[in-house]
Image: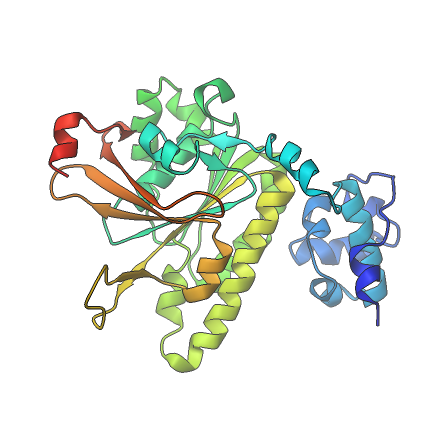
Length: 335
């Protein structure tokens, strides 16, 4: 059995590879099997584990070699913390459309991370996702990433009408904006997992800079009912979330998930609303935002619940026909 050193710190080859069949030891037959399993690109292979490649008929030793070569092609290696500081300067950010919300999360949505929006029905989670799918197509000088969006819709919440109205407000061509959003409707939790596992080629070929899963837990919640199914549900959610973060890191994209909530009647103090998914989702999401309605009107309150480096806080914005907008002083007093 290979040692930890063989898997994690073996030196990478200097040669770069563009397609799976270029990798030594990966012929047409093996390449076909890997693609059937969802590994279409060097990037997705670089972030795989040896165990994940076993169904392709690859031995553990060969799998470790293939993964090492793939990692060398995208320069994944150990670095010093001071080098990470420099790398952080290259992290891309996407505006939400609200300066207040951007400031709350440190200047906008970050690439290579998962941002989770959770809240009750009607709190604006899907509206935020629609806005982000439009904003990502803006040029960098306007807060965008000049790229496309992959929208995995699990609850039939994606509506082109909202995309059109938001695009018009930003003086963008609605037809072009819609063309740059790849929508995949997931009918079951397994289908949802399958779509994400086979998304690498779509991401690479369509310059995807934003991956949205709306919602993350809807199917899992309805299909895995009862305590006896909890372990299986959490295992699948865990694998699903880790696949998402690996895609975000490999392709330098932003990952966004929305999450449903449940009420805890035994909570007497504080907010009794809690997100679904337990510790698995909590630990994998880098930034968690809790959205809730205000007392009246289109105003929404966003609370930063968790962040690797930012303090908790709140901000308010409103959702109108135009999308996400700032709140006037008079509306702030009535929140």
